[in-house]
Image (cartoon, rainbow, N blue to C red; front, side):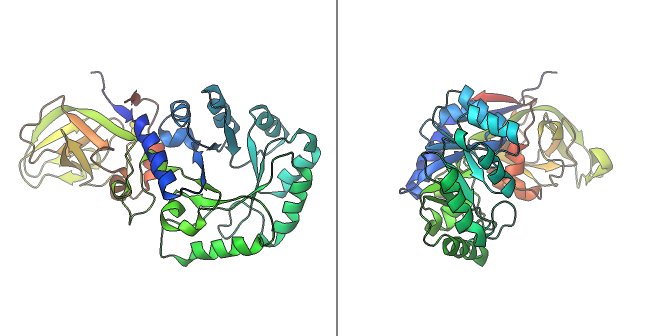
Length: 357
């Protein structure tokens, strides 16, 4: 049996979401984050679609090269910077700008200072304790970068740990710590990720760095995507491939994890963890069957899931099942899977066929 398991990618929705992001931060330039294969949406097609972006931001040199090969000729930012000399040389070859967050990268720049022509982005650790120089070193590192850089001025940046929680004081503390460390230091500033764009407008500054929002997913549980004008860019769908009549007491799937409370019709849909659908989706996880809600029952298998067809008397083999996307927010599905929406959209595997719409 052939499978019709597809991820429908709506490039118009991505362009729409970029417009929406600009309206939320009209004074800021936009660095569109397209790392992790554009959050599972396909880096080549998404980078081509984001031709109105001010900058494209990637995590790896390979991602940057793919952006260039797709036709992107604008500014390109390497978010983690190069880790060694070969990566530095590749970064130069794709004409990417560099985030500088560690002393080893400073040493690279000292050795190759005459090759620097693009902007350097100085990352300060304002409290996330992942990447970045300590705030007390900001002035000295900035001064050195200014002596090493080419014609483009140094950009100052940090990253937030808890911006998806609007009432968490940590983000405001990070903003204040960053601003204090940068007092009197000239340069453009970039603070806000998607969550901060929504929840902390004081963080918008010169550049914002939306990622998740571009793909129509809200980073804030208190602000659903539809309410902030975002459209889902990925709709994951498959077909119903079998319908079985089960009796009260019958168990369904591996581990006999679901027991039918009465006589039920159980549908089998052609998707599983081999396609990136989460193995830990619980009984009751919502799906759409022909646009109407139904519930997952039993464990997710590698290639299949099982669905309670109660209330779907008209269901038949070949009907369309939507796992997330248009009509069913991926944020909601993630809650049922003890996951975050990033995991779901980035985790769709290569055997799911992308369909551009």
